[in-house]
Image (cartoon, rainbow, N blue to C red; front, top):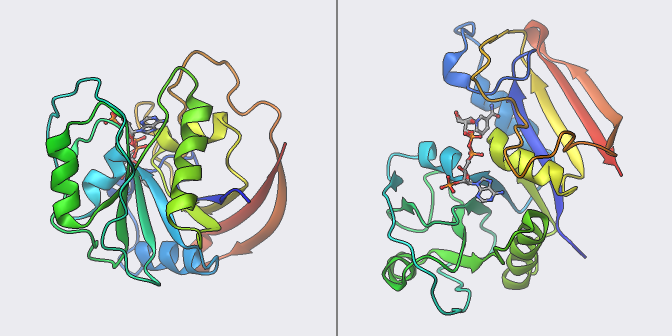
Length: 238
Ligand SMILES: NC(=O)c1ccc[n+]([C@@H]2O[C@H](COP(=O)([O-])OP(=O)(O)OC[C@H]3O[C@@H](n4cnc5c(N)ncnc54)[C@H](OP(=O)(O)O)[C@@H]3O)[C@@H](O)[C@H]2O)c1
């Protein structure tokens, strides 16, 4: 069975997602609302893009990697402890470096890489106990994403459900690939308004005028939180 994907995001009423730009009341616990809503799913972890992961913790930093086409190498299961959630990051070029394989919030870091990354980079990940899988990177982005999920499930067979938690770029790729099963949106009573600020889905792949075509939303749940924040949960039917 393939991994179920629920895209879980917090947005303004105009779908923007950069929370550092928001003027929220002092008593609005944004991460509490986001994490408590996520917890209802009992997922085995979450997925983010490289940009979102680079902001996640102080001990994650970014460098410019030296890339070259390399021979095929095996996936690697690091120091995963039973019961830990996974923090899956799509970092195909291997830009991120870490200080250990466990995030401050307790998840086990699992990187999705391309075969262009160097052996030196892989050695560093291994020394830290970080798990990694290789995505089959060719022209077909859908096949790339599916292969990554398949390899994650092969390495961690208990994984049935992962939350896709942004940013807009990785969410857009998953939408275009038809891999999002549900949307879980917390919509705050705010407007951002700036054209250059990311939406919760921002498809940047090969030209496609309608990456969401053929995908209809069925409302599963809605709830009004204190202060006018709205919770919406949809199934995506294809
Ligand atoms: N409000 C919320 O719920 C929420 C949640 C998460 C993030 N955010 C915000 O979202 C912003 C970041 O969003 P973003 O859209 O710029 O970045 P992102 O999706 O986090 O990361 C984009 C990067 O991830 C890698 N990537 C993503 N999709 C890929 C694909 N299909 N194939 C290969 N690589 C892929 C690429 O890395 P390379 O460029 O290295 O190849 C790409 O540049 C931040 O401001 C963050 O705070 C908000």
